[in-house]
Structures are given as structure tokens and as C-alpha cells.
Length: 577
Image (cartoon, rainbow, N blue to C red):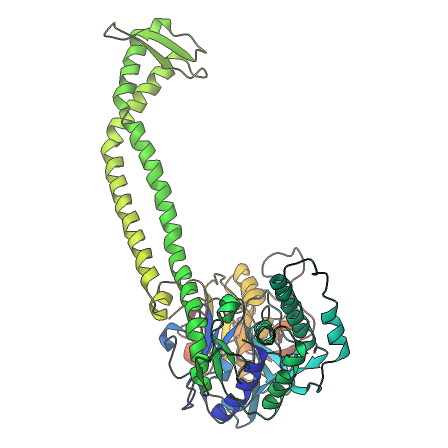
């Protein structure tokens, strides 16, 4: 998505979503969706499986709520107070608010980044700009504040001067050295270099826009510049006219190009004005097909892996069947060796003896490491094994061939499926939906206790689980608990914010005390801190953790009241209970 469309979309969503409520936020393989109670835009889909994130305001659902895994639970039930685009940085900021259990106003900043190599969704609590959670690969960069933007370019499309700066003209003029090239090649090189100079110098100008405008103006910047200035005026005055273009000369990059203004070119737009229809038009050509293709790959991944195992097994069974088919030959060799036992010597590698028919000589290979009698027994043993296993191997091979045919039919059926829900159902639920913080990692089973609708306590049951819970599962803003001075489980409190009541924190601390060596004490000191301050020393054994800063609570060991009789297990956010 280009920065101008994202910039205009911020104003469109502000008008459409201000005051609406987020009823559900969920992740699924390759994407993230918000379910809203807004009439014009009841769904907001964030497709994360491509090189760049795509945002699609939509009137129709893409994935059912049942097929999604609940994410960013802190924003469920919040009201959208404001939506804004952070300049031309391809970033949207949603300011959310809600009243907590004590009637106090709590605000969050939900940031959606549409640039590559950045986590697409991050959630901060405001004020304080404390990171609560994020969705995206852990290898992607994470913004430090809700309003962090990349360094601005020398010029902005929103505020261009009336004439091109001399520095820009000089930069384009320096791309010479093409005098010996044919005229059409020289023109193509000039347009390419001029477009690159525009993109490098002006915020808001993307490569397809620069190339398209220069191509329509025969590469003359003096003809393109007034149009760029007029685009900036339209954007400043918020006079958006949504147009989707199909530009064949741009290749795949020209499919469903979306701009909030008309281009000064001869190509007619595919549709105009309604931004929801315009974004849906683009998504149907780019985002949705890439998501379906991604889901098909993921859904068929396990089946293809199993198919490869079956094919290897079939190859081995075929070889075994061929070996078993030689059982008569091996028995014949054994009988010959018994007959000519007197000719066998230790260390022989082969022996040639006359066949029983007397018409030919038979050469029998021997194992020089074995004695004469051991070689004879070896041939009889192989013959007996082949005679006994022939039927078993043949039946097993037929069963494997049936399984292979079934797997191939299943994979073929998946390639024809276009429904996201059906594809997601075939993706292994032992793995979390890609795009979340613990991207595609198997999470062990944790103890889980729900304190209320927003706060959940997770408890490790071994050193390995403690290690995973603290250093892989927990988010930076979660609260970490451990009984002080004794061995015990690591405990994580999810959903905690700066406004979390002290009673909730004390209940989580009581759980940490309960699952420690001090369980039977009347009062136990428990240290707690945000997970961001917890470290694992290098080369330390699993379950080891140190903290930089922390507070101490004195609590009585115990479990939340409704969970005292039933500690429910948790297998990670991708597991359905």
C-alpha cells in the first residue's frame, strides 16, 4: 500500500469508526482482523503474509470468529476515540478507551504499520507509552513509542514548492552516460532514473506513481511537477476521490493500484469514490489471493511431509519385497554351500561350485569376516525371512500405496479449496497462528487460572516450562512473579496494566506462593516486576531468571476461589479448549 492511500484512509476511518466499539480482535495464519460495531466498516482485515502488510476495511468477514484465535484481549470492548495517519509513514494509530472495573478511564494506542520489516500491530498503554503486546515476527523491528516514524525525506508531497528544487534537477541530470544507447532504451533509462530520484527525494511518491506520471509526460519533470503539486493540494484539503488502476506496463506492481485522487494519465480507473469498494477491489486482486495461497501452503505442509515419509517407506518396502523374492535363490545357495562345505575356507570372498543340474557353475558371494558355517546359516536365514515376510511385506506395501493415494487426493482437494475457514481447519493447531509474538513455536501446556475477564495467570510446571513461560511466552508488559528466596514456579499475569487493581496483583502473587516450597507457610514474600526487567543469564540452566528491579508483596498462598478445585491446562493461544 502506498503512503498516500494510507494517509487518506486515516481520515476516512476517523469519520467512519470514531465512537464505534471493538467487539473482537483475532489472529489466524497470515492475518489479523478486528470485528467492529460500525455500520459502514464492520470489519478491518490486516493481511500479514506478504512482503508488505495490507489493510482492508471491509463490509464482509474474511475469516469467521470461530476460526480465529483471540488476540490483544485488552482492547476487546474498547471504544475507538480517534484514528489518525502518522504523516506519510504508512502507519495508522487508533486511540482506544474504556472504563476499568473501578470506573477509571483506561486508554490504549493500537498502531498498525504497513511498512515491510516492521511488526504490523503493536499495542501501547497511554499515557506512559508502555508496550503491552504486539503481533508479528520477533525478527521484525518494534517501535519504541506509538508515534515513532522513520526519518523524513528532504521534500513532502503535502508541501511541495511551486518549482522543482535545483538539487532535484541536478540529481536527475547526473544520470547520463547513455548517449550510445538506442533512443527507446535511452528514454527508458531516463524515466527509471528520474523516478528513482523522485522517490528518494519526496515523501509520498511511490515507484509506480513516479514511473506512471513520467511515462505519460515523456520523462519531462517540468510536466509532472504541476501534477504532483495538485496532488499535494488535494491531500491537504482532504478532497479524496478514490481510484483503482490496472497498469499493465508496471507488471505485478500495477495490479489494483489505489490512489485517493485521479492520475493525469490516459488509463481509465477501474472504479472510483467509495473507499471501501476501492480497497476491496485491490484486496481481491492482491491481498486475498496471496492469503489463500499462503493458507494452502500451510494446510498442505503437514500432508506433504507425511506424503514424503510414505513415499520413502514405499521405496524401502519395494526393496524389501525384491529381497524377499530372492528367497528361493538364497535357499538354493545354502544347499549348494552345504554340499560343498569341504571346499569352504575362512576368509573367502566367493566360491564357484557346479550347480545340481551339472550344466553350469554358480558363483556364491561370501562374507570373509564370517566362518564357513556362519555364511551357510546366513543364506538359510535370509531365505527363511523372505519366505515368511513375503505376504506381510506385500500387504503392507498395498496399504502404504493406498495411504499415498489418499494423501495425494487430500492435497489435490486443498489446492481447489478457496475458503479460508476450511484451510485454517487443516493447519496444525499445535502451532500458533503465524504473525503473533511466539511465531510458529510449539508451546507446552501451562497451568492457567482466570482471575476475571481481563486478567489470566499462567504457571510453569517444570524448569523447562518456567523457561518457556518467562522467556518465550510472556510479553514485555506482563507481570512476572516468583516466591522470594525459595524454589518455585514462574508465574505470569496477562492483561495487567498500570491501572490493574492491587487485589488482582495480590491474587497472582498468592498463586506464585502456592506453587513454591513455601506453600504451607502462613505468609510468603513474593517478588514481582514487569517481564521486560527479567533476564536469563548466559549459559544458565533452564528455569533460571534474574530481575533488574522488582517489588515485594507478603501474601498467603492460595488459588483464585473458582479455580481451587480445577486447575485448567493451557496449550498456547493456538489451542482451542
